Amino acid sequence: MPLRARSILGLALLLLLLGQPQALARSAAGDPVAPWAKVPAVVVVGARTDDARLPLVQDAVAFWNRSFAELGSAFRLGTVSQADATVPVDELRALSGRVLSGTGPTQFPPESLKGVPGDLIVALSDGDFVSFAMRWRSLGKALVAIKSDRFWPLSLPNVARNVIAHEIGHAIGLGHNSDPAALMCGRPAPCRPDLFQSPTERYFPVTAEERLLLLSFYPADWRAQ
Ligand SMILES: [Zn+2]
Image (cartoon, rainbow, N blue to C red; front, side, top):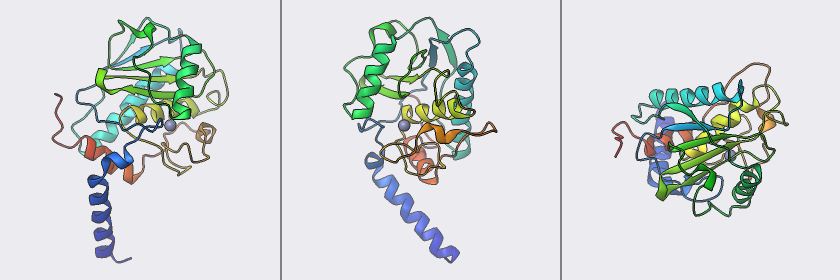
């Protein structure tokens, strides 16, 4: 395709995406996602001593902040700290089921997170369930819950790293795509987290469409409210 036609096509795609952010901005649970209006402080709960997932949360936040910087967006995720709290595995399993069935978020975050500071809580669980992200927009809170890395597929090399980045991707407003080579691939596409397995530690990429969508959510003049 000639360069001019390609750039016109690119512009048309950009306008299409900017015109319909809500159509694409759906979480895995199917609910519309609004961009963050503040810099969300990230708080990790449930981390064991020497939990290998803890540095991966730091890495994932750095990954997304690098992506925002490359995009020219003014938005950034906030600092990562730890708090003392544990969400019961049964409760995480139930919330995970709500996300998988498209039921949507509960009215309030889990009781066990009451008093936990921060906006984006990352629960590193010992349990076995499908990792998920849930957002309570009116409360300005989000929960990312990550299953134990002792269970398949998070026990596979390079999987936990990408699952954590994927779930944080939902928490900042991205839905799923159907490209098995991309970070945000997911249901209803058949790709599953074991696809992230790799002998080398690397992040799967964010697609060009998702980058445009993120920039429409969080433009260069984005300011915390
Ligand atoms: Zn997902």
